Image (cartoon, rainbow, N blue to C red; front, side, top):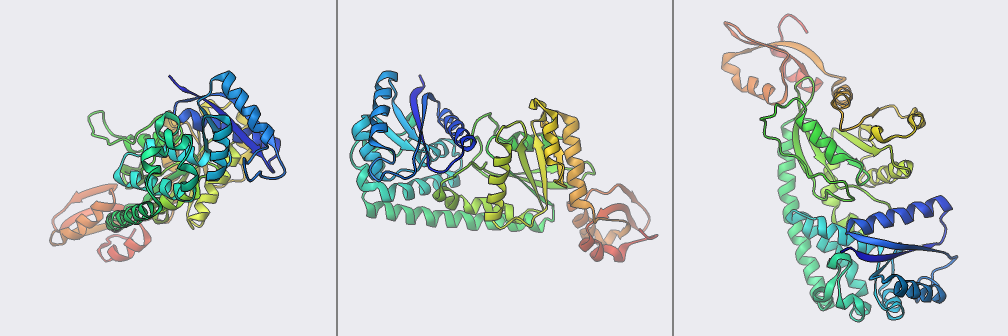
Length: 424
């Protein structure tokens, strides 16, 4: 049975539309942990109350609602201090958590790989540390978060020095994992296969899209290692790398990244920074957008802000406006006429995947040089190097070697042009 939750959003300086969007997103975050929002409350304030964040009268009102609706949790849309949580719980009488804690709980539940689990644990420890003394008492100690995935008694009982030691230990483990990832990344870069990163707001359809891209052109018997897909926030936390082929046969590497969300906790960004930096090494970024979402412009801005934070704003970007099949008004597309590199698709439709693949080829290979090469049989290492990266349009084995027609990057053409025959 889903646990009943009351959400509280304090409006300090938001307009009505932004406030509504924040409330809706918090409800979805609660639902991501199988919580049931029975009531969403808001309060306009010009200042933050140091003791309760909200006014004392509002706290009493929340308490009454909790009793009437049999709520088990109160979730604040604003970040609370440890003392504010403690004070609120003493009056309301049930567990109180904030948005940051909720997101950490979601990440904790979704983490699958060792690295993701360590990253989430590190973020949770950093969140807990300044709140330790306040969280030692009350409901925060007695129970976890929604679904029992919160901080919990065992972690709270750790003293400050123990938590600091654990933070140090996890940081060291993540550095070792990062070293290994850097080695794998070097091999990937040296392979010269173009790297395409998919970024976007959570639940925009990145994982569905990457599965369609890597499976395009494959027969039913081909073994395809698909990325996990589910219609929920933060279904994917880990960075996955998958190989795929373009329409011209060229092989590429697709990188699927964790989805973004508004007001993402700072500690979480820092903990996942090593993983997110995969984007830096991309030849192309696909910014996947759920065009059917009412908050599409805000979601685009949040993703672009994160790209900028990662110092990747100079990268070549294609805006992939996904889920056009869910659009009620086709005229919405006109709002994005000024974006040069864009494509409107439904990841569910094969013809739209073809459209996207053409756009990818145009962006990646607009500067390719078409050439005809003759590779002598005693230079088969060169032949192997070419075939490891490119798929020739034509190959013929003659008396003196192998002829091939192939599109090469300009830098590779300068390497192999000594084997060119009959011009380009």
